[in-house]
Image (cartoon, rainbow, N blue to C red):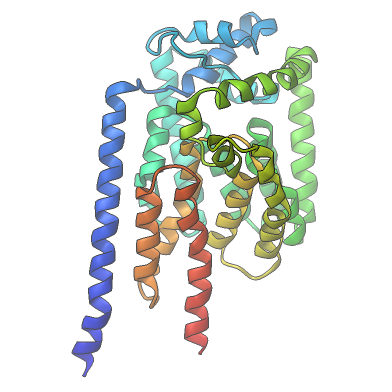
Length: 362
């Protein structure tokens, strides 16, 4: 009697694995084609040049044309590639800008990928999370996703180390604040007041150090550059097409992107309940990063790598009766167009996990 039951479970598992394998292979193939038309470091070059400008001409730090000109080869001057990070992020970027371009890029990718992989493993994911197509995209473009995501994931994984977690989140916030905008809600819901205080003090200390090092004017220049950067993004059809936020989804269809902010209460509530209840860390990460994308006007397809540890952790639940469903959702996440549509399957993983627990309890 056991053999037929095994077959019933085996067929969907094999089918799901086939779909996942095909989705990953197709994603890898797409990335290989990307390397034919986009030089490595397409995003790394922006903050490499920004740090160069800060060291020589801080008054030109948020001059989009000037920073684009500093990048030069291998990316050319066809499109604006501005530096748009806050001045506090310069402490991270400057050491790499002191190196030759390719040496700095290689060191950056290796160091941040190692951090991200380590943090993901601390959160319960297997090492192969780094092979997910969105993660491999970061290895090519050199974005800060590995750095900021790694810091945030490690902070939530190190639950018993309040000071370390607060420092990590504070450092993430001074590099790319929009990705950790909801960290205070998560920490309060989880009762981690010590980490919240340390996060605030860390962020304040780094910002004050940036004022001491680069002056106060770059902060005003940064704030003035944000609306100009929005115009650059949303007036470029190719960039809008690669954005993964609800805001961009609406803008792409000629609707006011600000309508997406109506989802803000839902995003905040999702983070609050995920961290208030005894929820597994992968589910918390999905809620945290998913809610962050809801509140952020601009986030490109490379930010999908933030979900790689949580998705990989679900793929390891092989004893779960709904494991084939997890695999199919992961396949959809990897293969759907890298817009907000590819975020939806990840957001369904916690719901599927909850359904599985209810089935087991019943």
